[in-house]
Length: 115
Image (cartoon, rainbow, N blue to C red; front, side, top):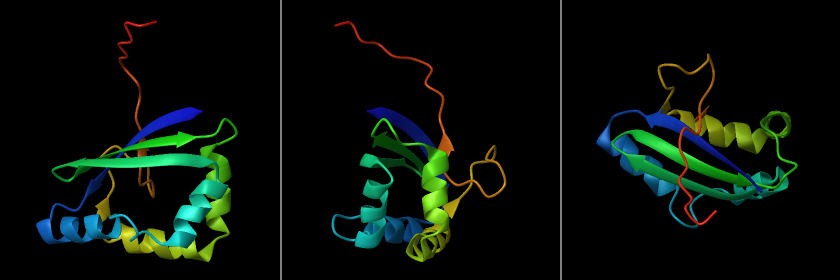
């Protein structure tokens, strides 16, 4: 298993944030999108929010790569439709590359006293 942590900002508007969260309530995400994630090798996704900053934990199988996922996304019109819909709620972090949504975070600390 691999684990990645990513960050993204929402547009700082309470109504848009409420709408975004509605799209992510259990059963609200499009099944074509969640099925596509599983096919790409994603085994678990958790998204947390504070203010308008979001933090995502992505767990994947060992074969997962972001390049493979991007190639799969590019050939799936339903993924593009979902991403276009989500983009109306999202804004890039100031240090994101052009066109980049979620930014991969660097792990800077881990405390595991049992090991």
